[in-house]
Image 1 (cartoon, rainbow, N blue to C red):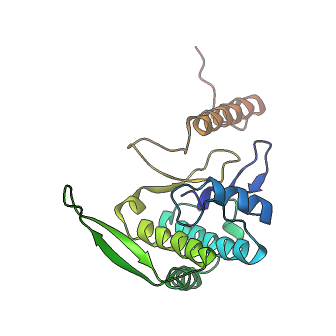
Image 2: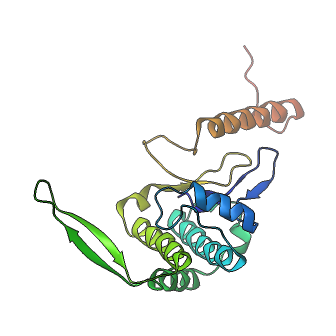
Length: 198
């Protein structure tokens, strides 16, 4: 979700891409504490392009998940075909050969981890992002994925309760204000539903 959310509303009616530049990509990578090899990694154009490619695939597949509801308006007009998105995501995940390793301390429970045969931290990072997307898209949370359709919002979110329609309370407030404005404007111009007489 963090990768898909690097395309977001800028607060002024536009869209911001946190990965639009190498500097922005570096800043985003260094904020990702749960990713292998992320700490201290400095992006170059090749790494930025690899991450953006995975993000494009993820957002195209997110659009497929939320269908028949509309996808995020941020990139609905430029989504890659689902088959191409699948190929790109799987290819990125396959760039790093990993093997599960079992750790079992004398005092404690066993735990699994992945051991990588890849030396390049950039390859490991892009592959980890792709694997995370594969895990999400093949897991149970996928069924709760939604595109927020509040005015100006372009985020995808995980629906956490039955009546949730927006990614954040602020989006819900914006949507209610917009609906109220449309009803009020429609009533004033005679285009809205008829007003009841007391």
